[in-house]
Length: 146
Image (cartoon, rainbow, N blue to C red; front, side):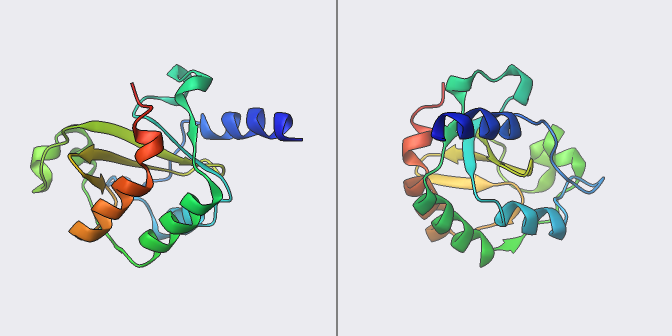
């Protein structure tokens, strides 16, 4: 059974679709759909069709539960689509460090980056404790990024 689930999960995770408003921010419905996913994985920030199966790093059920808890209590950010092209225009620090995507098995995804010992997610306004907690939580998968 597990052998059949991984190809299905990989196919779902590699779908390049993410639901965003035309202004770049995920819709509330897309956020709720992301948070309702049963399976998630962390990948390099690259289009799905460029990823190899070795580039997909599934999260454990415990990691998913903790991630959902953290994001459920965080406020969402509203970003201009321009942010994704020119991060300096958003008023937030430009992306540095390891960029990544969190893909859900329902084709929703979040973009983020590891900056030092903190994880920043573009669509969420996280305090320093939450950013550090996410970095610790996702450490095994982040360590596998090339």
